[in-house]
Image 1: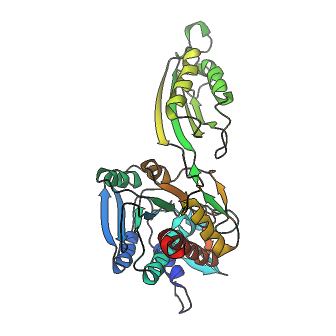
Image 2: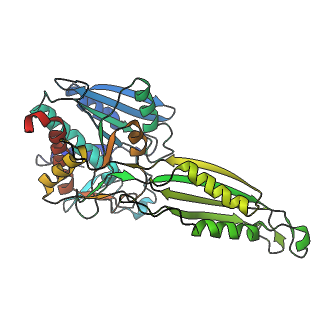
Image 3: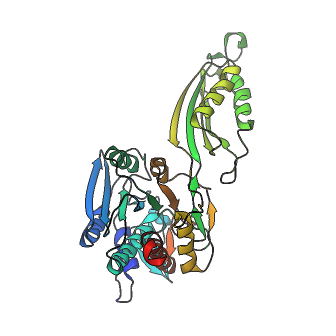
Length: 395
């Protein structure tokens, strides 16, 4: 779309990124655009391609990099979910359009707007403070919305193998609810899924003595699992939730008892549990009901939490202060919602939070973000860089 001289750098960059149809796992040149701009600032860019996924690790060290100096990382993704039915969009999803101060397009909120705000904030910061302490890094993937197999997790494996550690990380996921910066995600619940196949014996409904109905024998066990009290949660997390997402059985005929039943379920769990405890308890209940079954587990991510600390320069305190300095409000801390790539970064020992624009339209038709929010988000990221990397100068 045409841009006027008054269009800000943040909005210009967001428009450029949104116009590239980078549906998972495609990057569509987004990372090259970022690399070009980061390279001009003195960042060392490293492209990591794993299978069908393009990843970027980019880093610029300040004037010193002692063992105690932090590596501050912006993390995010260039891929977006499919646009869906184009006829339902008021404007083409990959032709970003501004209407009444609102920027529309696939990825506007999740999360190309955040990437634009990060990059412009970094450009301003490095220009203003070229000799900051520590390092600034970017970890960008094109596989966050997809299988998440060859993205951030593979980059982290590479960094860990060479003992390159992230100290602090802001993931640009759309965390806000009503206004930008009102919510900071300082942790996420763990996620574990299962594909359960309960075996019976198929036969004619008129001869129940010759069949084993998998629907009948599965129901007591599935009911017990759905009603089981896993934990009470804690100060940071709600109680663990077990949810059945699919049950399937039957041949389509009313006079045939099916031979098996399949069920899919997921647990979002707190730090009161481990995936091992969940697996043991689920299989214990299935075994108690004497079921013949196969079960396939998928471990999507462990829970993590970044707590408020009392020490000088505490990361979460610094971020909340940065948000307040821009918005005038004190952000609330939350661990609600789904998973993010923060689950791959936190286990390395990094302190991870999620901070981005409002999430009301993500993955929806007519995805959008206000231009004002992107401007504020850029200012927030700039203030975060000041708070974390200029500790000596600001104390």
